[in-house]
Length: 96
Image (cartoon, rainbow, N blue to C red; front, side, top):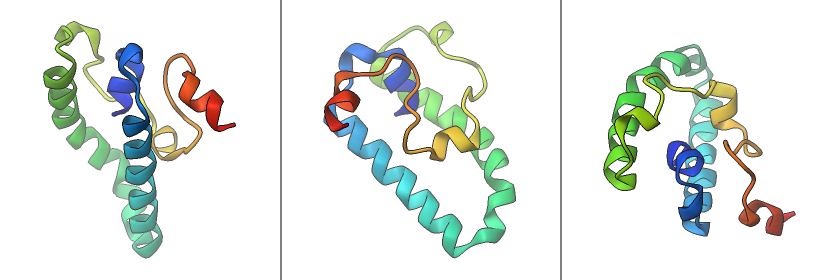
């Protein structure tokens, strides 16, 4: 959803925003319950990026060259509830 958010801004929706919020909270809860997993986060992100890239390609129909070959977001950015790549959207401004 971060890839779609950044590379298909015209399609941003409340649904995408809520998905990002829920998924972030679920990962944070998991890390809180299992702090020993935190060192593995970069590796898990790297492994799952190819799957995320494939989903973004299928859903957006954008050319593969549109997206980075490796994950452009740090673990901190991925989990940061204030991080939304690309231009800020009206959805975020409306929530403030």
